[in-house]
Image 1: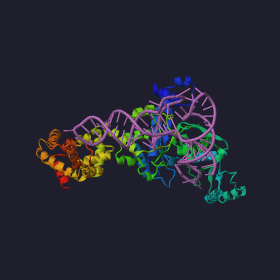
Image 2: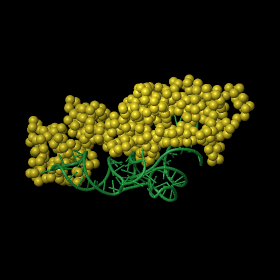
Image 3: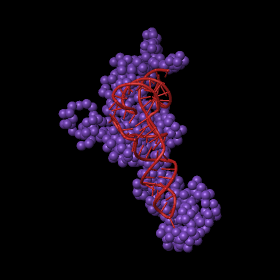
Image 4: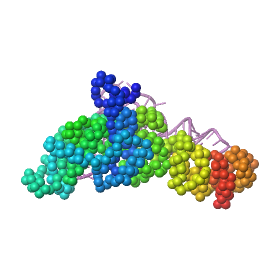
Length: 500
RNA sequence: GGCCCCAUCGUCUAUCGGUUAGGACGCGACCCUUUCAAGGUCGAGAGACGGGUUCGAUUCCCGUUGGGGCUACCA
């Protein structure tokens, strides 16, 4: 029983006996992971990958995947962004078991945790103003040193504290960082160690009484019984602070797993200037969700073998945190498109119909009553994106969608006079075929006869027609193409190409 | 600056001390199609550097270099 075996390895130390008699369901429900995006922007591919890994892990161990929207930054969070994130996950097929919960609703608990820490002497009120802090920071950096805030490093005279308190001045609550080693065994990085003395007495509660990120996260993760915190490794430096908070709050530590970053083609952190970074961009580009999932899964994780196309069930069965790469990876759009092409080839025309129709709608093409299935079937093996596929379908349906591409132009240039000459030979032969007998087989025979009669290589007969009908040099076999476009329209397009 | 993380072909990766360092994308060639793709075959292409440990290091340790992250009353 594979699941049970995996679970026993993933669960906390426990005796063999208790494990043996533990009902599987109880073990299965123990693991709880969460994806916690902040709705301050679209769902970018890095976030999507984090969500995917959480989801894969939850599925693999039979745990629960919780979605929590971290909207505590009131300035930048919007409902629209939340919706875009939810839509992005839905499109990708990443479903959550609980939520979405909104962190903004847990203010009272955050405050209670901060006050408990205050009462226990593990946190304290600080009356320094933002201006005073800025000045201290500026002074430290001017001296070439690092700014760090602790009571000892930036003491405030007792009288001053009393005075400000009496005056009702605003204050923040800071966590009293203990000077001790803070280490954890990261599920992907292994042992990581920090020293409390290198950390600040960081703020946990703002002067307006709202929690700062590190407190909010820890408070929520404890309350939601999160057992595995799987997130980007840009959070590694937050982890020691959060561990200190867990300890101060007397809570059991979750397992931390820090995923490597996804970089742009230039090796820099992925940002808007790298072009498409939102999952919505890839949807618009005509990437299929399954292909996107597959590609993202292979960014930082490997099933261990040589497989590239990994079915979802296989992915879930084989996913482990131990197999996650430590190194950041570069997002390669070309490989994504190749992979998408693989999925396009494997999917049936029926499965592709809806996505293609959606793209046709975006292109403003009305297919009318035409049966698109044969056209899609002929083209899907050649296309890399649904958008490209839809454009190809459109150009077959509507002459105004015909665009002469670079390769098409190159062929015309290369053939010179022979281009139009070849078309002039094919035209009357095709014109002689009646609408009733116009089909792929008939047209093929006719064109082969044209080639033989004029001692032309078949390529020199076919390619000009391909360019005349599609504008490019890549398409389904030319006879099929002629059948799809139809007799009159084909002849018209050939005529146009001759005259051009 | 300080602290932390990382390092195999251009890119994604396999290897868990002993391999002609494997696969995939991309690139090139060829085959197949008396038409384009797709597909197939082949080819070029990597262990950053320097020290250790070891009979033996891509693999373990240290350093250097190079990347990256954090260093907010953002998340």
